[in-house]
Structures are given as structure tokens and as C-alpha cells.
Image 1: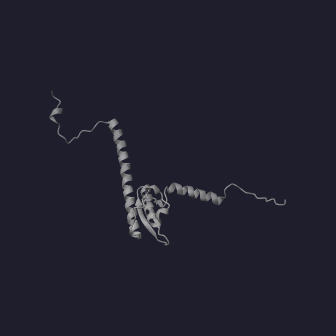
Image 2: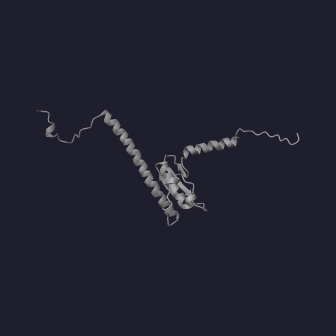
Length: 159
């Protein structure tokens, strides 16, 4: 037995590893993007911790997770620069620099971006649902007449 090392390496995960994996999977389901979370009532919120401080910058509450993620990306880009880990790195432009780096100015810029994205997402969702309902209703019924309108002389029934 000289030089022989007997080790029982168990490849099956331990209970702690399983718990961590379950927790990570649950976070992936709940948080599709970095820096956001969902409230119990369905709103998505974003916030970020200030560097070297215990305080956080509140970035707002949004209807869509995409809007909250874009607000987070804006704030983290201004706080940590181009090396920051972003949700959408392709959407950030370095030439759009913020001159005042205070928490209030970062919050303001991030909430502007988030609100703009939220409005676009909501209007896209509303227009797509309206177009779907209009296409369905047009196949089933013809155009409804305006009951407050007087009949025109051309449409009289007597000829």
C-alpha cells in the first residue's frame, strides 16, 4: 500500500449543494434580470447599492421587468463605468455621460430610462392586444352603425 491513496470521492451533491442549486433556480425564475425583484402585487422594482457605502439608490417601481432592468443598467453604468455587468450591454452608449455623479442625478436618469421603456412596453402590449381583438371582431361582425347618426338620403329604402 505504499504510495496508494485511498479516497472515496462521492460525485453526488451534498444537501447543502442541492439547497444552493434549488435557491439559484428559484432566483432565476423570480428575477429574470440582474438588480431587480418582483413585489408581491406584481410590480417590478430596481435598486442598487452605492459603492463603498451601505446606502442604496432607489431606482423605481415598474410594470415590466424589462423597464426595471434598463433602469438598473443605467444606474450601474454611471456608478461603475463601462466594466459594469449589465443586463443589456448592447444598449448602453459611453458618449451619454452624466456630469453630476450624485445619487439624486443617477436616480433621476435611471427612472427616466425605466419610465420610457415601461411606457413603450405597455403601449406595445396594448396595441398588440387591440390588433388581436380587432382582427377577431372584424371576422365575426361587420362595422357597427352609429345609432346617433341620421340616415343619409342615399340609403333610403324606397326607390
